[in-house]
Image 1 (tube, rainbow, N blue to C red):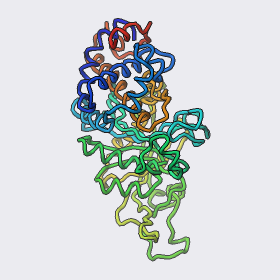
Image 2 (image 1 turned 90 degrees about the vertical axis):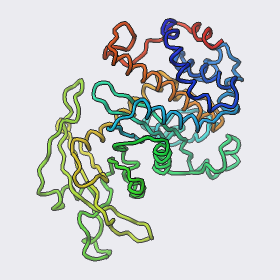
Image 3 (image 1 turned 180 degrees about the vertical axis):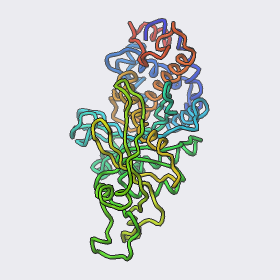
Image 4 (image 1 turned 45 degrees about the horizontal axis):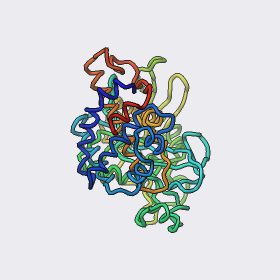
Length: 422
């Protein structure tokens, strides 16, 4: 942002951050929050602690201690953010998107870092992986989106090395959990803070775990997500419990090709959304199936039925398989709209890394990582709320208004930041 933009928006940012004062034990510590968030919003080449501190005229060590040592409750901050999103941006069509995001890091000291799959690079890389929950109203023209929960995915190699965890100040109660289990805990916490999702949506890493679906059922939360082609279901209840192939659960790709549940059905064609390259048109078939329940040590079909959808892109021929725990009278267009709402989290990650330093952390302590993610989420919330407000007002003399780009112009220099927080 340039000097005029920083000056005009600083009162609104200060008013926003004042809502989080109760999460801080001391006023001087709270003051560092504004300095750090302003630094994340500014046009710095690197948005880690050192360049932000130098630009703001704050001692580097002081800002490092703000993230990693000083007394403030970042879990309280996430709860405040969730309630704020509901108070100001709640929608009866609100969708929760679960996804992980990897950040490439060098060295061995950053909490959770190891060689593991990195979606950002599309290969195994030395990186840190976070599990995130995003809320979006999925508005077709002026959407609001915000990450409302972020947690570290702690690999088994770290969880089994408690001395290494203690060196990174990772509490003993933080242990290895698969991403789907972290996601369930995030959803439970969000619901407890008043967040309501019309749908949850996610990729095959979550959808291909039957226990994940059973947890959503327990919460009474409707979801739809991708599953792998080899995900097993029963298209109909078996006549007896047997190890013979005729009575075994079947792969979803084979069910969609050969089962009577699908073979006699025609394709339904739906326009999912309008894009700059034209309408995105998909065809679908759907049927009711039973999932595989292995609780109790023996595989058996679930009592209840779930939707199995096979969808095909008309233009490219791409095929996806989806499972949903929606009721029998579900609306296809709503289900497809929820499925493709995942693009909001991909776009959020992209912009947060570019505009708010989401992946620019250089920390060696667990709470420093979580606090950085919270501050980046606050910066992104502020940008999203201001962009939505300005677009709604259609005020042409403001940057980002009038339905143009969501990007904010880069700052010419950091002098306004020094003046604001100095």
